[in-house]
Length: 212
Image 1 (cartoon, rainbow, N blue to C red):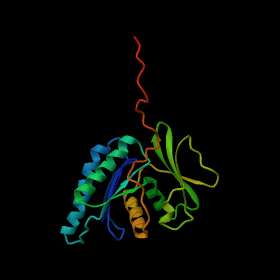
Image 2 (cartoon, rainbow, N blue to C red):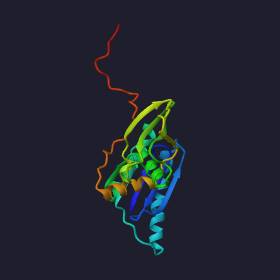
Image 3 (tube, one colour):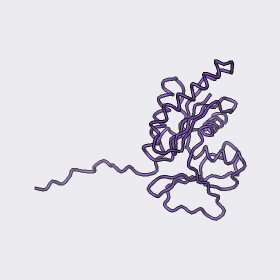
């Protein structure tokens, strides 16, 4: 079983079995309560999986924790990554980082919605959007390898490039991306959040000028 967590937009948690079936999931599109809901969501999802096993269902040992690494705003994104790290360390399983837009891309392609070149777009705040371009010409799972990732103000797609703007990242699809890459022996990015935007606070480059 893979446990997937994403807080790059709203908050989403899902437990996905080795065969790809969704065992339990919780989500909210609220972009301001990540810290308040991540704990209850994790407890409810894991408790639901354990309860199903006690009631005679199959046991699903945790094999890894998938974390969405964005792009997303700093405050929300770090809540999910920190929670995923904590669960992975506590359970002694690997932490599997996946770009959050890849989950949307995979779901669009597998559902037959996206074809050719397309972009996944999410709100980056400050009147900006995070944009990842994909190509559906490649077979899954390689389709979820982005061709371009950037932060834009006033985004308009190129001619012939479909645009899919989303407000939630499906945690189950995030687990499906991780499972497909693991099965294919593909590499994963470093578990570093994709903030895209430079921090507001910067280190001083030299001594301050003192005036009397």
